[in-house]
Image (tube, rainbow, N blue to C red; front, side, top):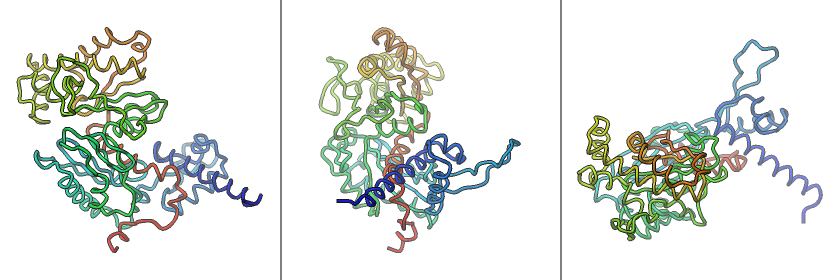
Length: 411
C-alpha cells in the first residue's frame, strides 16, 4: 500500500506523462507551434509547458527556436518543433499489386520512400516478407546513423488480426490463415514492436489526421483497387471491431444474381465496383491490373463512350452500396480512395443519383462524397501513424537511451 507521499508522487508522475502526451500529440499532428499556442491547445500553464518542452528537447523529441519578430509588442514566444530524426518509424504496405516501405519522422514527415511492383505469382508470405526486409534494409541505410527508431507499422490488404498480425483471409493474394506477423517480425529482426492493420482502416486514419477528413468526426472511407475495403472513423476515433476485422464493406452482398467473389460468396459489392468489374464493362481483360485501369481512365478522359459507360455503371453500383452504408452509419463524409479516387469525375453523376434515390433524406442532406487527398500512399502513411501511437500515448517512456540506427548496425 502506498503512503500518502508515495501516492501523491504517483499521481504527479501520471499527470506529467499525460501532459507530455498532450504536447507531443499536438506537435505530431499539427506541426510546429509557439509555446503560447501550446498553452492554448493543451490548457497547461506557461511554466508547465516550459518545463515539459525542456524534457522533450533534452530527449531529442523536440527542438526550439526563437520566433520571428512580427512587429507586435513584447517578446515573441519560442517556436517548438517535433524532431523528425529523434523518433522515426518504419511503415510497410502490402497491396495486391505492389509493396511499399517508408521511414517517417515524428511530425508525420516522410524521410524515405520506396514502392515496387508485386509480380503475379510472387505473393506468398515468404516472398513478401523477404522483399519487405530488403526494402527496409535499403531505407535504413539511407537514414542518419543518429536517427532513433521507435516502432514499425504494416498495412495489409486483407482481414488481419491486429493483436498478432494473423491474416485470416486476403483473397486477392490467395492467403488464408497466414501468420504474417510472426513471419515479418522474424524477417525484419527489429528491436521495436511491429503493429498490423487492414490497409483501408489505416488509409482512413491517415486521411483523418492529415488529409481530406481532418477535423471531421464521422467518416467512411472506401478504398478500391482489385478488391474493395472500408475504414471507419466514428466520433473522432477509428472503429476497428473486437479483433480489427470491421470495415470489410467490399463483402457486403449487393447482387443476389451477381458473380462469385474471391472470398467464397456471391454478388459481393467488390464484384460490382472493383477494378475487374470496370475492366469487364470496358471490354478489357478483367485481370489487366492497374495499367489497364489507367488506360480506361485515359479513354474516359478522351470521351470514349465505352469507357464512360463502364464508369457510369460502376458509379451506379457504388451508389447502391454506399446508400446502405450511409443509412446505417450516418457519416458526414465519404472518401473514395485507391483506384476509386481518379475514377470520381466519371462516376460522380450516377453515384450521386443513386444516393438521392436511396439514402434517407436527413442523412443525404448531411453527407458529402469526395476523393481522398493523400493518394495511393494513404495506407502507408496510416501504418506510420499506427506505429507512432505508443510514443504519442506515453512519450515519457522514450525519454531514455533508445534504438539509434548506429546501435542497431553494430548489434
